[in-house]
Image (cartoon, rainbow, N blue to C red; front, side, top):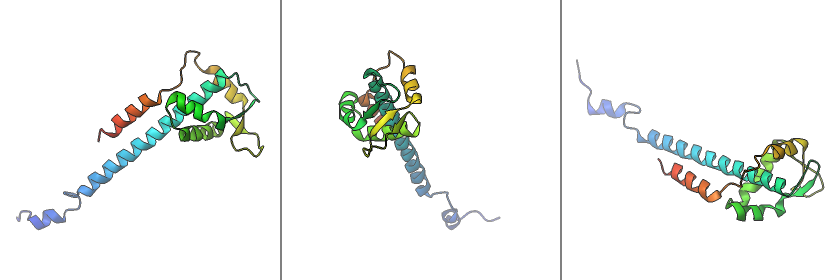
Amino acid sequence: MRGLGIGDIMKSDQLFDRRNDGEAARERREAKRTAANELFCQAASQAILLDLKARGVSAGDAVDLRAYWPELADQTHIRSLDFVGATGALVGAGLLESRHTGHRYELTLTEAGALAIERLDSRATPPDGRALRAQVVSALNED
């Protein structure tokens, strides 16, 4: 019976192939980045809904969210870009709808949106983007 020689070992497909380890690590990091983007989008969505509630917006009321994004970004330390994505997510969820006025972000709060606002915890506070960012950085550095 012949033993394995170095040539046989080197030919084995994945025994020493570190590219797979790198690929798996890249996939884990990408999954974490995707989760981080979703986390910030959810946080921005919550901040928008809390703001609409504080402003007394009700079903059928028109709002131009572009005017709110900079203020919300300053309050929450979440990027304005995340508020753009969150606005799209709220439209996709049926909580806001387009008024078709030609202004892309002039939207109307729907009945479902009014119900979502009504169901918000009265003690809820806007998310803290700095704390979220620290969690994300910690999670990304775990690899």
